[in-house]
Length: 259
Length: 323
Image (cartoon, rainbow over all chains, first blue to last red; front, side, top):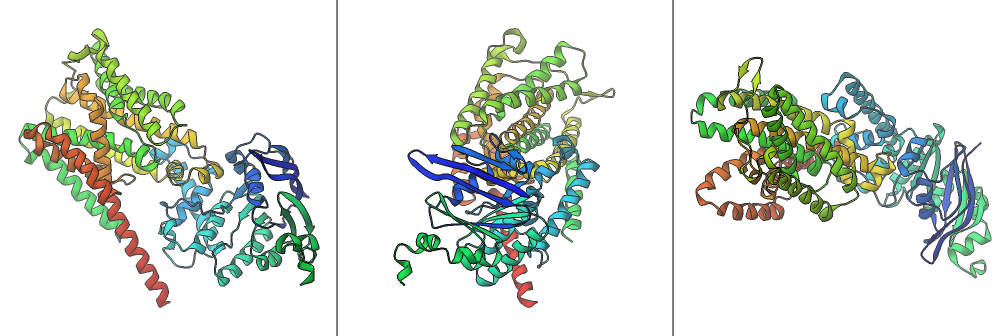
């Protein structure tokens, strides 16, 4: 079943066409990678799917609904969560609170219930916290007791990227967008990350990932779409993409065949 | 361990505060202590917008004035019990806070500061030109005392206890709010607007909510003030008052539970100590703002918190090395 369908999407910034009539589909439960050289339009595509940018032309369809005119917070409610290429954690909040904040749109306590700490608000907060701890455990941040109380900004770079994933999962998304999750990670952390990504997909959450680390992408993706200069130049299984002459040309340049 | 200790400290503190009127027999000092309580309430509201939601606001004196004037006018011209007039003052101020916030939450930083300054000034000018209703420049006098279940809070000493109870209630409300789902949403828009929006938090609505809450705290504080001193006039509610409130929060540490309390107590005491020097007060304020921004950008409570967090993470590193 197709969960996300990007249909002839174009994005123009004053004179520059960042994404040009691009189409691809993401299957339910798959790990789908979006790759391409710098400036290929991957992050622009992500921002259009997440709702931070509007499309100039074309349509994005998610779970049977047209996303046109919906804002980022609407899309979160519909089931699209994301992580950010530039880490965007709530730095002055602790680790657990960051994950709990990710569950905002799945919780309901209002201002009065919150101020008076009514039993309903307390119960919901406890359930949210339990779920947050579970997720931290799931992504591997639950090891050291008390780490949950550290401020998010004081974690290491790799840990912050992992925390972004836990926060995104807290909203119980159907689709999670991972924007260069391995950037700045050491090899051990990358292995752990691949494992986490596979486990996310096993839980039935579809993953769309933008990543420069080819080893990670080839190991984890079910399907790969390659963009270059805003145009889709290839799509297929990892082993086909690896040998695709178009892709090699885009990454290494003309004349690569002679090497 | 920490929690039990904290409870002890709070209990001792509360007992000490209850004893204050028994020790401070000087009526003027007791008045100062009661005013400190009122300022704490106002500053807790200010902190929800400034410290927790990250929005600059300099209209605090406006909320303070709305609460003071509306409660005073209502209690003089109607038979409504004073306590309900006070609550009405808070609610009206809250409602106006929401109205002002709706168009202005698109603004950030100095633009928002200008709008909130404008708001405060408009309220002051309305009071100044309100004719008989607000008493214009002369203000309103003979504001009735609070009367609860037949007990009239005639003396400053008795009113002190009422204000103390209010401070406890408002601190509990603030604590509940900032640690709740809504409080996390406030802090998330402060820390990262775009990420907050991506997680389903309606950034504009959260800002409006924060201003609405601030309005209630500020308005109720103003009403407490009006029925304490029995006389109000526009000059009490000038921009200078908003600046003083903000300084208190900055010095104590914004975005913390105890910061505004510490800042309010320290600055109020300083203010009293400098009373004989007249205009020098404002020079001292200016200096405090500069020193705080340069050396204690997170205020007293924020700096202490940072130190505590650093120690904690060091302990964690040690324990994980050992294991």
